[in-house]
Amino acid sequence: MKYVIIKRGLDFIFSLIFLIILLPFFFIIALFIIIDDGFPIIYKQKRVGKNGKIFKILKFRTMKKNADSIGKLTIGTKDPRITKIGYFLRKYKIDELPQLWNILTGDMSFIGPRPEIPEYVALYNEQEKKVLKVRPGLSDYASLDYINENEILSNYSSPEEAYINIIMPQKLQLSLNYIKNMSLKTDISITIKTIIKIFNVNLIK
Image (cartoon, rainbow, N blue to C red; front, side):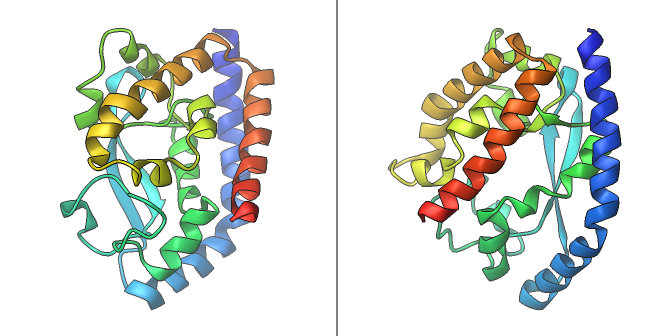
């Protein structure tokens, strides 16, 4: 309980600092998005947060307009719905940076289970619903193990079915393991590993 309070304090302080530092960078990204595919700059999607609270997760828009109507999952590295600038933003996870605002407002944390859409959360069993006891985050054990999730899904004939029946349960188990071991040491370790893995995966490519 004590760490939960400390964790929230650290989330608030660091998200505010990063938002101020990165603000000029955000304007540059926004300009590239507008030049590439016009407005809007920010993509908002309903996700399920702590205690089942619905919030809107923020991302730099990387997909063409109305892409959601074609499908909710991104498949492979060359999904035709992704814009030109979107490929670059996704490659280095830059599209996730607006979630610093979600962290600042308390809907998310830096480290925690990735928030899911309501349709998939409705499929959780009682054990899996325990991930909703903590704030969702930018990364956790599941994010590390499935950093190339889009490519994994491209190997299945029915990606959404594979996600629901195979990948999602495995990710939830990893997220539950994170919750059991949640501590400052664990969060620092995951943060470092996430940064290293993002660059290692892209260097290999």
